[in-house]
Amino acid sequence: MTTGIDTSTATLKQETDEAMEKLHQLFSSFDQREINVVPFEKSWTPAQVADHILRSQTGIVQVVQGPTAPTERSPTEKSGQIKATFLDFNTKMKSPEFVLPTDNPLDKQDVVKRISDSAKGIADALDTQDLSRTCLAFEIPGSGPMTRHEWCHFFLYHTMRHNHQLEKILKKLHPTA
Image (cartoon, rainbow, N blue to C red; front, side, top):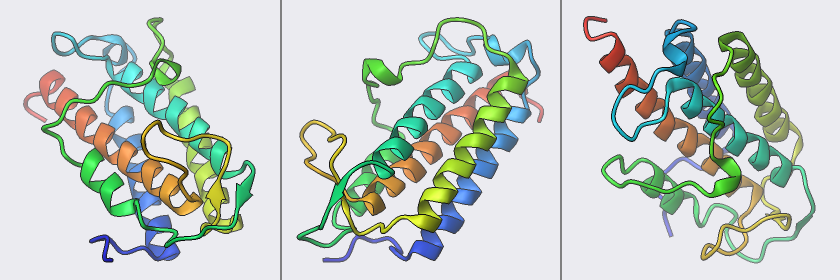
């Protein structure tokens, strides 16, 4: 079965590096005041978007570095569906409570440091872990166990989805940029 994506580790690493660099650039485009401004009705602030991404990423890195078992199927079997789900920008999603962002104002430099730390965490996982193994620490309800490779794709496409959200916020706050 084809997933419609390049499943090589080298491509995954490159795409993840690019998504994290874009997250850094987008978030850095806001000033300290703007990161805590609600841009649209029922929207998160830029800081809340970043906080949500980083909470998710921290959890994913922990799952990828956690206990695993051998995989009895293609280790990238679910990657195409993960991509299709997260890159469908017309579908609204509800985040689980444990990755909801804080309601407190955040400091820009602290968030930028957390972005850098998260990028290092996933890069380390991609460089040191056997991505074909199935992770046992956490399952998304209804999805069943996922491999490290699939979790890394989740990390990538979830980041890309919210980068798109930050781009929309940036256009709203900087219409001439």
